[in-house]
Image 1 (cartoon, rainbow, N blue to C red):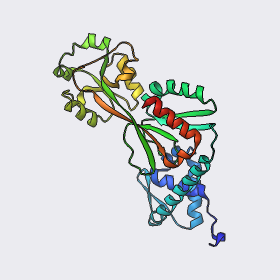
Image 2: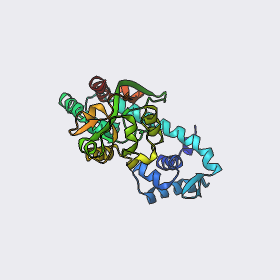
Image 3: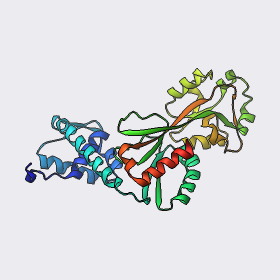
Length: 294
């Protein structure tokens, strides 16, 4: 190999890769934690270094040029190799000290993880924990987190996964809402109720209809992309929402509606990259979560 030919700035290549994956400079800058001008300069510098245009504008986003498409597979392979190198380096540490990043849904992060982490910290005070509370799936292979708690089974063969439990979720409302708008004694009576959900509730509506709840999009008068906001609106008596039974049991002044219908099953999976099992602190946290939440 002629090492004189290797004069490649990985930061520029990473800027190109993430911009191509995200579809715009603004989205890529957020993903990398950079300012948009800084990211733009890195991409422009790579184009100047290679002597080719990698992107062309398409509406409000960016589209790869033929040269950019040709480079994409090579740079993606570089990204996977760089991630593997980072995992190997971090995995060599066998000390039970250091930072472990855990990503989980907002509900799990607020209601389920804190008591578990309190005991973990008592047992292993040298381990520091960073919680990434997000309902979006974080990319473990790109080290957006070390360990993930997910409600869907992962399909990536490079990840290890352990099914922790199957939880249940039901319909809940504040007592004040039921007193003001109820009674809700039959499934048919819910057709006049106010529901709280997401901006796009097609999947939720299909699930409710399958359970015999005759709701349509018109019933969802309050929406939010954030589960915690939805649950707070339920507690304030603004309508009916879905919540896991264990969280609802911790919440005063809410009641379960239609306890006779089958609850919604929710799986919880603990996920990590295979190579992270060589790190003692990662293994400790992973095994602790299995024991506490399994």
